[in-house]
Length: 183
Ligand code: OFO
Image (cartoon, rainbow, N blue to C red):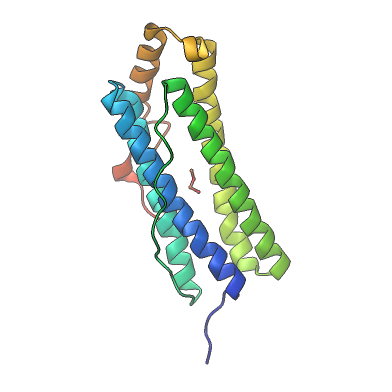
């Protein structure tokens, strides 16, 4: 008896999203290492924590695929894109990455809707809300640097931003506090 509760198409798309979340984690990891290397420990702290969050998103999708009796396919994760060239560019890349991920999530929402797979549709709503949070966070950080001069931001502005990000544990859950149920 076939107990798989995901269609072939939806299972493939969920698996692709799982890999996309792993890829996102690698992107944040590489940007974090870049920031640390360039003396921005606060920015690195923020990006490393976010790398952990993305990994938890990956686990959340993996657990859902298994829960629906479908097969998880762990494949190679594409390498992250080139390093940023500046802190402003770093948050531009973060924002672009998040909007790109939102598009992938919306496709999954539509696919679930079209198939009338309400369990998957409901599952995906968590990600829809999460993307609003993540896009807003990236947008706010980008705005802060824009106000400070964008690419021409002074070292004072960058120093303050770096210090703020060192201390934003109240806005972003620290890696050690997250769970797959609450990434
Ligand atoms: Fe950046 O968020 Fe995952 O889904």
